[in-house]
Amino acid sequence: MAKVKIVHIIGALGRGGAERFVVDLCNELAKNDQYEIYLVSLCDNSVDTTFLNEVGNKVNYLSFHKKRGLSLKVLLRLTSWLVKQNADVVHSHLNALEYLLLYTFRSSRCRFFHTIHSIAEAECPNFLIKSFREILYRSHKVTPIVVSADGSESFRRYYGLDNETVIENGRPFLNLTDKAPLLIEEYKKDENSFLLIHVGRIIKVKNQLLLIKAVQKFNTIEEKKCKLLIIGDIRDESLYQELYAQAGKDRFIEFLGGKDNIADYLNIADFFCLSSFHEGMPISLIEALSVGCISICTKVGGIKNMIENEINGFLSMDNSVDSYYQTMKKAIFYPDKQRIKENSFNSFKQNYHIGASGEKHFHAYSLGLKR
Image (tube, rainbow, N blue to C red; front, side, top):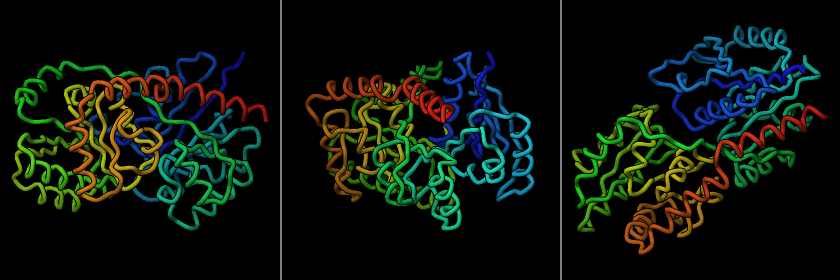
């Protein structure tokens, strides 16, 4: 019996949540011998700064070497390649949907999907591109997938449609590396401080300035201090300089850059912090849940669908420094933190393991192929 050929297309595999998820999903789908999985990156990917080396052996990886900006040449080459592949399913992510412009109208048998990894208006603010996508969604040429109930609401509000499919993000169980003992020695020998971990690229939407100010306020008021480690690639240099200036020579705040051993850090952390303006369904939060690390987050986007306040984490009621500080204080001095940790881990097992997400994608593809 011929295998079902599934192609996932993304701009690049840089260290971001959507990119992390796409690699994990392709690896998970490739475990099924009935499927032939291709992962197409429009741009090149460096082993040192992307998830390229985590693409599994069963996944067929291909890059079209696109440079910055829209490339008509890559659009034509991708279309030609897709025609030759004659795939059953093509699934795009982030900014890759526009590169299917020609192929969506050329192929009548292929089933197309596109995942909206953030709130709809943030993912596609351009009016012309929004109009193009709306035509594809409305005509059922492309099935829109959203990652949370909040994402579903934003899709309906932004596009005026109600034909989206909700499939939550997921991660496999995380493994510690041989670097873990060194981190314990470096960061856990001081019992007079709490260790906070933030994982997120240095971009405005992650709102790290709020987190830094809240930690500094806590440390000014409280006797026992918080040590904050900020992990993530610098995508906005001017913002990084602003954050660095705010942190100054504060010995309780460190910028570590991108890391490929996130589990080692979450494993030793007392708390995981996310202070975003908006989110889809953050992979970093799923990773924190997977190791039972207590989360302190702003109540935005898909986060509020994942975290129930004082059940499996803590939610700041707004994006003010004082509100986040008060939430930090409540979490840090909460009397039954062990229960929160156990609930965090259980919510991951029940809802956010990559296996569950893979099954839901299989189901969506199967329904599409029957149409």
